Amino acid sequence: MAQQDGTTGSERIVGLSKSEAVDRVVAADDARDPDTVRAVLDHVTEDGTVTADGVDSAVTDTSMILSTAETRVELASIDLDDAREAAGDDAAVGAVRSRLDVFESQVANATEQVESLGEELQELSDWRDDPRSVYDIVLGLREVASESQALTAHADDIQLDIEKFERWLSNHDVRVRGLDGDVAALEQSLDGLADRVEAVADAEESEDDADAAEGADDERAAEWYNAALRARVSDLLVEDVRAELADLRELAPESVAENDGLGDAAANLDELDARVQRLRGRLGDLARPSWTDEYGARIESFEATLAAFEPPVSWGAVQAELEDARVGDDG
Image: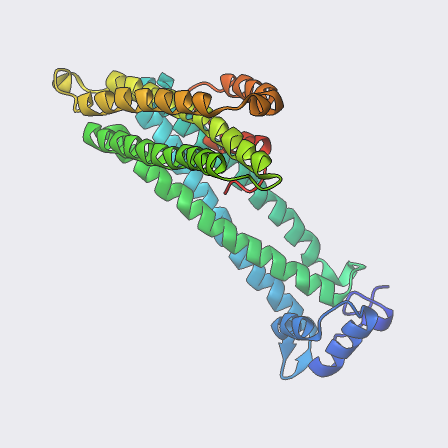
């Protein structure tokens, strides 16, 4: 029969003073940090002694924390249902569908996580019959509590994002401002790309004026290659924002059909598209045969990878592909 604290032998600590319990837990595994052990056991210590009631209280406290997370995830799920209903037929429009897809994935993941935490807590709740040490039980309870609190905050963020989406969905002006922000961000991104291109050009001029140090050409080649990758990503950015523009025009109410407020964004996109092409041309002019020999096939492979992305683009996935393809420190 299991003993009162769910363990036998060297890690049986219920009934010990906290100091004695810390010593016993550390003695059982010298990799454990005494200060960490002491902080964990604080949660199950009453009047200086580790008690079974303290462990039971920790289970109850953790259950309450998890219950809050469960409620918030359920509320996020309800809000998502409301958002789907509000979208109606507009859910078929790419800009709407992609946003709903993100929320559905987030809510599904949060639901799966809260269910997993519930299963883990159920196992920990039966601590008297659990072969694990009381210390490991309490440590597990603290982990469940911490993950539950993080999940609560995440579910709250999902709800806030869904509320923002519903405002975006119901208000054309909000959508226009959002697109203007996307265009401004694209322009800023191209400013950064232009700086990279000019850095390659400046390095070329410097090498023409003096003997280049050994390995300098390799460094310039890598900078040129990384800039070429970012230029391809910029092409995709323009394509994605154009698709968003088209979707917003489809969503625009008939009352603003003749003056939808999207004309400036469309004109700016044309200018930014032309700027991307100029930057790509500049990179082409700067390329040395040795650079294209070394990196040409990799650029073509990256272009093929990007071709698989269609608006609305998953930019997290694109960023991951860029990180995987680039060379050196291109932060």
